[in-house]
Length: 443
Ligand SMILES: *Cc1c(COP(=O)(O)O)cnc(C)c1O
Image 1 (cartoon, rainbow, N blue to C red):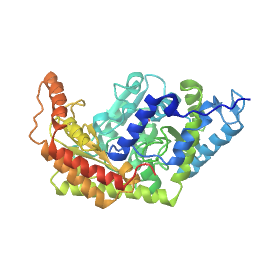
Image 2: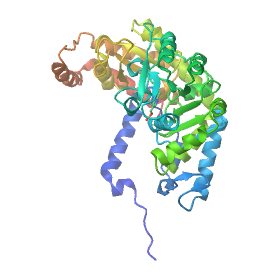
Image 3: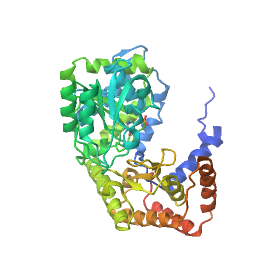
Image 4: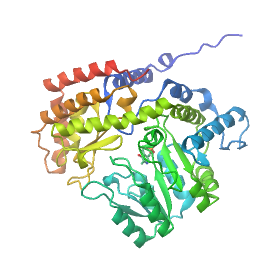
């Protein structure tokens, strides 16, 4: 018998291998301050890249439509048990392909198309899937949106008034660009009064909840959804939990969610992803992870304090989570994002509350500390990062974004090209790279 040689990616597809290597270098040499991103452990990546991707296993453990499931069932059982134990809930579904499909499954399980639902508006820090008109959630459901007040805090009076007026079947509490702790108890009171399901989407803050630096929604929400790849540090994926409260409200809720995921919305679960989620949940159950979650918040506060001390306009005056928003001036978020990219600090442009501009040219940037905290950076490094952000903002302070939409696009392209040759930015780039070298991403 001839022996089959295992061929590496570099041998079979040098183009893709080269691009992965280039991206690995980019991740090593720049710092990711996008608050929804993180760095997975080698163990998570080993499970994610495993032969489990070869398997089909439509259905749920011990009730599958294909054979050969003895190990797959054990893996999914472990993932579900670990999720239930970690969060203290009686039900978990670990099959959602990602956060958005998880949220769609919640709608399918609890609502009919056309039903009224309520969520936080996207420009106010909410998520697309909470009823924003560009997403299916705002298309198939009658979505009512609540907002933040002038101080950037969720306007609970508006939430209450809208809930009483529109009687939504489902209320979302969960954010993507909101620096403050959420008051789940206040939402639960309103949801109870109008008979709505309360769904907490903790995607961004799951790691903080595990660490105890953000309150847990388990006592207040009926359903909890989360991505697994943000502060939780797992592979890309999603989880849906039903709380004791949720099962009391509707004992069939777990079964409805299982059905919504499969067969309503998805086919075969991604078993490699399920295994990697199980690994991440095990990692998140440790004291080391809880310490990590606390450090994310400490770092975010240190970054905010330093920026404020340099005169940077931090929206709402700070943060008590993992992220903060900077007001860069009318429509200038994109310029700051591009200039920071040039020095190896990756952030994303973002709308700010009551943004005078539009989502394509928003006035803010959003920055978060989960990824740099994973690399081991602490308060001292946050201060250093703040000086770089301030220096970059100062360097481009005279750049004026045109009012006209067409002129804007041309201006931004030329701006990006022009700053590529800026000596001061190149010098900061070298400093950023040197700091990154001291805190390896892949360990
Ligand atoms: C990231 C996020 C999602 C969606 O997650 P994807 O995996 O990108 O689909 C949903 N809700 C909130 C609040 C999020 O922050």
